[in-house]
Length: 105
Image (cartoon, rainbow, N blue to C red; front, side, top):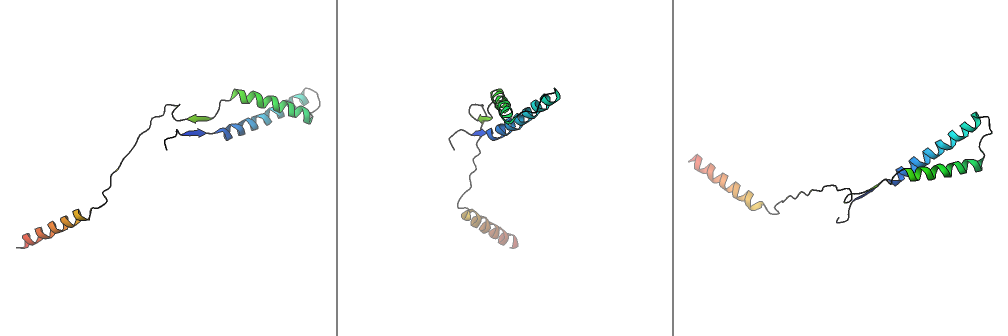
């Protein structure tokens, strides 16, 4: 528990890059077709995807956060529970029964 807390959301970042890369490839393909050209070949699609992934990878920061580096504050809460409270309960019951006897007399 002494190690700093690290939140790593890199799988979400990778999914975002993958989705955006496929969108960029399709937009390039549609743009080429609308400009009067032929649809992109598999090799051209791969080249566009590689370039888009590289561009997005450099543009998006890492999605990992270190709690100490972020300056997050911490707090501790300590509670104490007595292990043996039977003596207190016994004394309270004895006091109550003695008080009851005094009131009856």
